[in-house]
Length: 464
Ligand code: FAD
Image 1: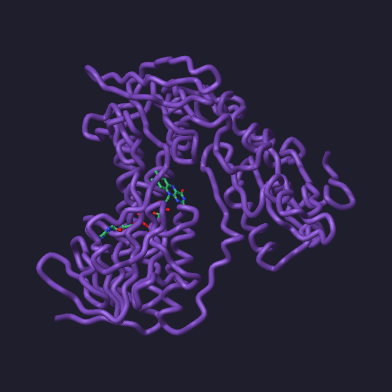
Image 2 (image 1 turned 30 degrees about the vertical axis):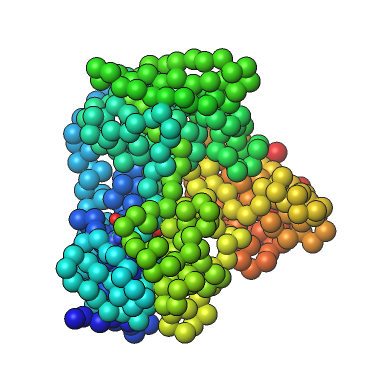
């Protein structure tokens, strides 16, 4: 019987990063993964394939909308969907194979199959039981179901985020249920490829939890791109017939019932932890009332030697949060001080323009009872953004009015997902807005807009 220092169950960004760090720290490590390839949801059916399609559809959209303005004349390219799907699959494959390479390099065993925790220190896969000093649960999440909506990814009519990545053809019409990150990213992919997209959302605003000003600007921008929104609407059902779907919903303001037809319905109302078949009740691992694995501040469950990380535990369901927890849990198991700063976890929506945020929104900062000040700068005042036809949008920095300490930053505009990191670093160092304002930023970059927003909090922004 093989025996390990650590067995990680699940090879997503949480699990594979945890395994690599543990191996670097000298542990004998195995990872159990039931999927045919490594990398979890993120690399196989999440972050990576969605970004490949976002990239391809962005290029196509640019060719159709902005090339002529720059004197790049000629026919708009036609979409060969089979080739686009091949490009996406190849992007996924190079990344999942990359994890296989890293496992070999770090001498990590990949145990293929679905793992069951038989007891603390015992993981069964197929007929084989493996002994280990520690177990990390990194089994991730799955799309949440919605009552009345039966997903069938094979038929390609009512699909979830996995099915929408492999549609046989580009649909003429699509209804997206849920205006969260996944729904809007994938909805915008198809909208750019020519699909008429309608998003139905239960709440009265899109992207719940985001800064209110960003929400409004983001919705306006997506509407300009041709996406329709039905807000404050509770979906009652979605049914498929002869390759078409009908969605019924009730408007919350007056309870009136409406329906809409579409070639494809994407159910994107969130994700829930996946711990099916793991045997957690048998070993007595406590769960939260939301079905997540309950952990303490060091990612330990109530059962000695069993830890949990990533989407399976509370907190934002993001790949980089899972990765950070993976590294930290490995360090804790090795007797070191693993640490994750949950106050500085960026969130990015990879539409065009991108939306990125970190830390407190203006409203959340006010709720803490602090005196709050806000510095804003529009991309209309940023030369680089204008050259890219992306002058819509702004940077908003939220700071403590008494100490000038940066509490949060919210950006809608070009490269937002990259720019946010300078504010993350500033926040990690407990920087003031003045620290950002006094830092020389290269010209012409979109990052200058971050500095200008910080300047707006002090002496005043220059380019407004
Ligand atoms: P997962 O990546 O879900 O991996 C868990 C793995 O465990 C799976 O491979 C599963 O097969 C395996 N497993 C489960 N149970 C067992 C078992 N019993 N035995 C063996 N193996 C098992 N996040 C971002 O930060 N940025 C993005 O741009 C982004 N885009 C996304 C787009 C989409 C369409 C989706 C669906 C998600 C996206 N996410 C994004 C979220 C991100 O994918 C997750 O937060 C991340 O994958 C969580 O990592 P994890 O390691 O916790 O779990």
